[in-house]
Image (cartoon, rainbow, N blue to C red; front, side, top):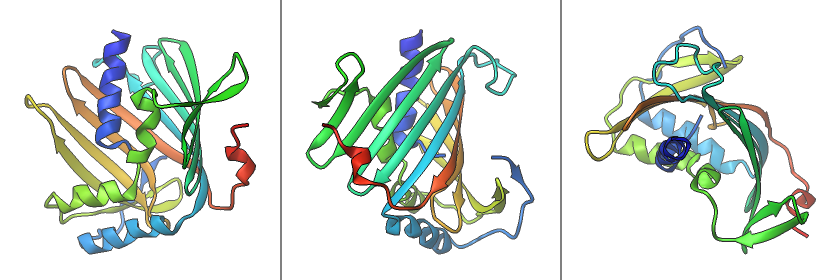
Length: 225
């Protein structure tokens, strides 16, 4: 069961995993070009740190909004300095925690081995550990180009003006994923996402991006020696 649920999560990440309190709807942004220009701002960000918090109720009838012990909790710390990326991924499923540390460098991807205290170059990563490459404004832009959307309301997320983009992704066998993404107007990066999955089971993943720091990251953060 746990493997099946992780597989569902991986499917979502491979399609688009992006990510808070929502309040005060403002004047809607009706131009797709305006949203595209907003997303383009993220391309110019060369170095940043942020965190992702996610909850996935493992019971489709869970009414606790992801606070039940029968939920999967995800916390990811991200250091991104092009072309380097470091992630510390912590996932708790049914109260059982797992942690994975990876560093992506031009020559490949390294995974930290806590038993040997070494970074090992690898090509064998679990798919959920590589999903950050899909959290990219370019992916949202591609999806926008393939969908007819004319209404982009703006809302305030954690005190930041954001634009809501609602996307849908059709899968095989009448399965689908509906994605609501709040994009930070000033930076073009996501602040929050709600992903409703109509797969073999219906699941609702909530992701929140927070603690953004737009500043230079020391190269030593990405050392693997």
